[in-house]
Structure formats: structure tokens, C-alpha cells
Image 1 (cartoon, helix red, strand yellow):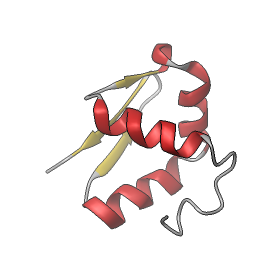
Image 2 (cartoon, helix red, strand yellow):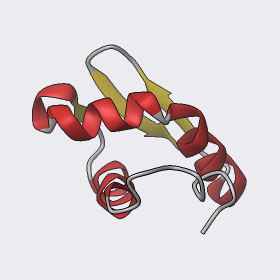
Image 3 (cartoon, helix red, strand yellow):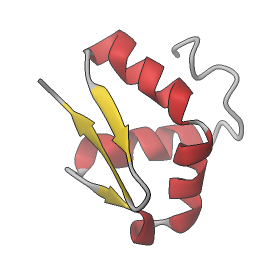
Image 4 (cartoon, helix red, strand yellow):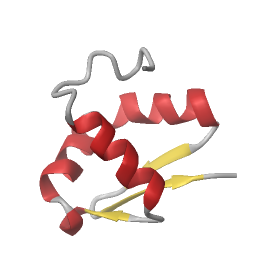
Length: 70
């Protein structure tokens, strides 16, 4: 696992969030409010993870998140 995500807790949320962001083009706050809050709380760690491993940009707005793949 990326060093960016090693300190993120609870660890059980990490695989769920990684799957949601990869599988859907958009992740809306209404889809899973708790998971969306978790993403917003740890946005920097997830952004570093995706940039480091895939070169993707994580975009998190007030009501929606997505991965920007160039």
C-alpha cells in the first residue's frame, strides 16, 4: 500500500473507496455520505496515492468526486 494511505484510518474504508473511485466515473455524496466524508477527510492521501501510482488527478468538490485520467 502507498505510504500516503498507511496512516489513514479506519483501514477498512480504504479498499471500498478505491473501488468506488475506479469503478464509477463520478462518486456523488448522496451515493454514500459516510464514505464521501471519509474521502474528504483524507483527500490529500488519496490524491497522492492516485498521482504516485497512476498519474491521475483526484478531483473532489462539495457534492462529487472523480478521477481525472489524462
